[in-house]
View 1 (cartoon, rainbow, N blue to C red):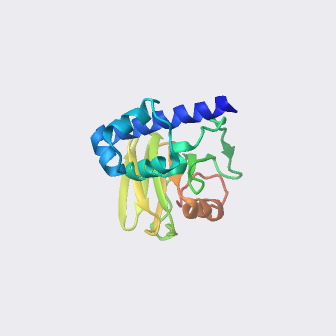
View 2: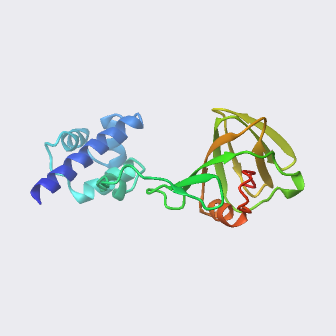
View 3: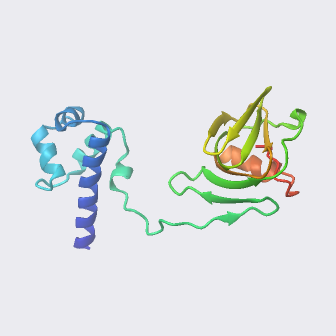
Length: 196
């Protein structure tokens, strides 16, 4: 048990320092935000002073993070395997630290549907084309997205996509509302057309 407490203590100290440096804050900057002295903060980061809960709360606020994120221990599961969507040529992964977010890998083979078949629904989507060229219909605009280019859009705008000149592999990040639409809205015919 003591070993586990020491491990968490060391993890929190490293996170404090890493977050401070990542935000470009000096010891003095963070100490001022957290209402601590710079020497106290230095001793906390270096393990020369005991971590106190009240100080952790102040430091979390000063770093604009939550106390949970400072003290959370890494789960043993780092690698996850995809699940296959039945009827669609896609794989999906859930994002553990953001339960409403899903990552989809999709192979798009057909051309985009007619503009009058584009759909709008609640949600947000972000996608990157891994290979091929994707045509994205978004409202009354048409976008050509090539390999290594990305697009991000509000799904309340009518949208659809399809392949241009051959199959396209797409990686998408969608929120809970958009994911629900992907599950319910696709016809499952395997055409690979995308009514996002």
